[in-house]
Image 1 (cartoon, rainbow, N blue to C red):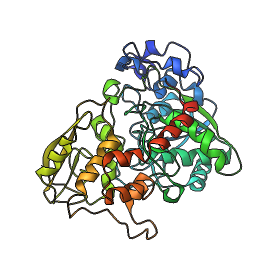
Image 2 (cartoon, rainbow, N blue to C red):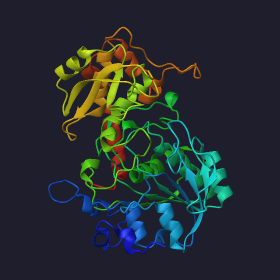
Image 3 (cartoon, rainbow, N blue to C red):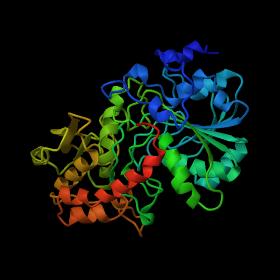
Image 4 (tube, rainbow, N blue to C red):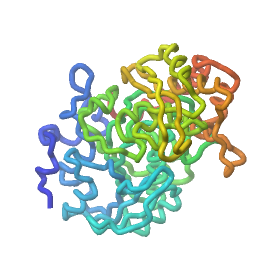
Length: 432
């Protein structure tokens, strides 16, 4: 069994000496050090806070864990392995999201139910499960407390937050408690992008929030509980507890945290990917490759029909915090497999000035100038065939790009939506 000291690797012991912060005091507890930048030794994820207290937040409960490879302590021990080794916790089972608990599945896939060889725990396949199915899984496992610990990347169309939302609705329906072990948002506090509309909700945007939400999963859970769960029918809110991050400056990025980066999904290999993904995820809705099948997904964007003019035109726009390198690549899977694609590699020169959504809109506008450009259409959804509409929340973005509108006019269309979201989310923020 790992010793308690081994769970506090990386100098966390001193940082954890103070009492656990409550939501009311988390803002002051999480203030970054002087200069407004989080230093790695000061940033302590909620999982490490809970582990240092011997997982007392979970004692006496039958616990179900929703996690994936990112649910690690600062010494890289997975929380499920730590909990299982503790000896005083009753673990009902583990619930794997998209890509699976141990992370072996590609995009749009999951791991089937199995017995984890390390811990002997049953791992249930929860990917794509709605609240009703999730409640069935929790009941089958006999869980009365659900723990969520997954590294999000701060974007509406990244599916883990919707796994969390369904799990919260499910936990409420069976009277279970819900505990979030919070982690930093790797792209910080900025909110941006169009608001989802009810008509275009899907697995890549199940509820009405803006595209780049600028919240941690703990803050989102509080927002979901206060704003959205009461609309899910009788039952009101779920019994929610968030174990906050310590020492995190919400205006910092993952490059400044000093925490180990575990890819949240196979095509999110580095913090650099997370920084651009809030915008370049749009290219999944086009016939351009979004870089899947390369070593720099979502940073390499291209198609067989693009040429040097694409990078030249983008650089001429002088977008803040970014340069575009003319690049060529051959995807090993995904769109244009085995075919040479021209395009760009995005080089973020200043993450604090970089605007991923605005940058991606500019990239769409310039790509639309090529005759071979097309929007991806899905035959399985004849009512809403355009994937970009699901990613952006409505047909508005697609319509404005097709109409030849330029970047400033397009991004201005959702400016007030972002301001309204920022006003509403303020009550649920834990870090200032």
